[in-house]
Image (cartoon, rainbow, N blue to C red; front, side, top):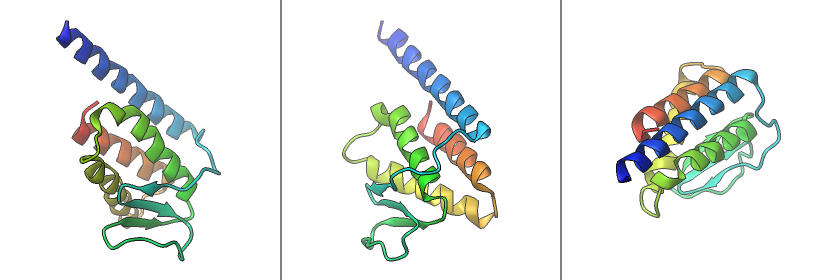
Length: 124
């Protein structure tokens, strides 16, 4: 019984990941969304935004779309997250965004790269 529940949960995550990828590819993500700040990750377009030394900070004109992406990933992987590993999960998303931007990826490519790496590294 426990195996069936685990399989069903993993299958549901996989479906939600695919739906998220479709949403990104279609450009149906919000252009105006509250900027993300928490668990050592800050995504903002405000260069004066306060942050702590431990924070991964992403300054971008696409802060709304990327913040939306973080929340969507949180919804999908929430059952994997706890009070400790969230400090790995969220900054890792920021590191992935930074890596993609350094390769001159556009917003769509960056978002899809993040989803694919999180799926690969955190399991779907």
